[in-house]
Amino acid sequence: MNAAIRSIAGRLRRNSTTRDSHEVFVEGMSFGERLADRVAAVGGSWSFIIGFAVFLVGWAVLNVWILAANAFDPFPFIFLNLMLSMLAALQAPIIMMSQNRQAAKDRLEARLDYETNTRAEAQILALSDELAAMREDMRLLMAAVGATGEEPAARPHLQA
Image (cartoon, rainbow, N blue to C red):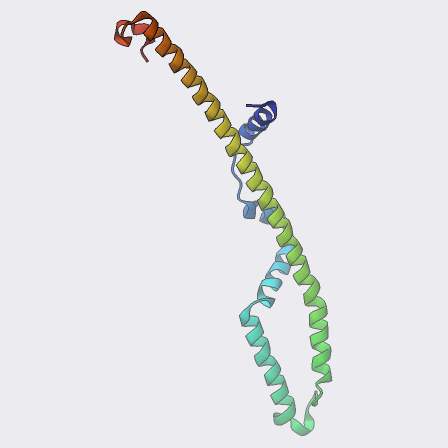
């Protein structure tokens, strides 16, 4: 096993706890970040889209047919357009913040996966070295038994 792998293996043995990337990431999130993630989750759902479509149809029906002559936002729906523009102006950066956090979470998960893979590689290499040493011991034992012509039972100090 080369020196770089040995140093990584030693470091990983000292820090051998496995960590869940989601738990590690959520620990450091502020209230605003959690709120932004919830807004992005709700704003990107079919429930929100269907509910908002029902709201828009209701707005149009209310202002065109029910209130007709006394509509508070007549047909080109200028007030509704203003409200939708303000909603989009607020919702877009919130969704982008959530996407940036998701990218950071993905990077953290990739780093933790790399650490896990490196730890597994170091353990496999250590086991490979141990197996090679055991094979060498077995070869030496077989050579010693073959050279004397005695059975292992006749030599109790060689028995396991």
